[in-house]
Length: 224
Image (cartoon, rainbow, N blue to C red):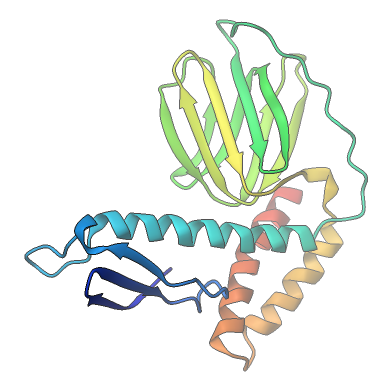
């Protein structure tokens, strides 16, 4: 997913350049004080910096995925969700918060179950689930509410945190109700991305197209 081009110990600074070709976005050079980290005896790259750049790459890929999802949306008008919240979590309920950078879709609302597209596999979260943190891949989040109905949202990726006392927090870069998407529009976008991915264009363009295909195919499967 990412590649370190070079690292230079220049005086008091450690310079790191990250290859941008996979995600199609130039990543600014970052500098870290030499005192904050050093190579180990085997000459391996410090884990602390590697973790920071893994997170950076994942975040930028999420933005790419979000843009692909936005392009595939139909012109449907979204209706604000009706929300209720309670002071305490009922023994058989989950208190759910689902947030985007620009919008809180759920604010500590009691629900029965939440199904999430974790990187480790599809998961169903019920009350009293063991605490955990799950990275989410692009996919469908299904929320089963108290009245027996359910709502479905397509998220570009993100994280789900199960806290003690049946509290679940989901944070994503972008997310939309599934009904906002047009199956025909998604098919058209897939066709365009396939042409670019299999064409004679640059590696940069092919990488972008393959990322779009990943999210669009997940979205197409959710719409079936």
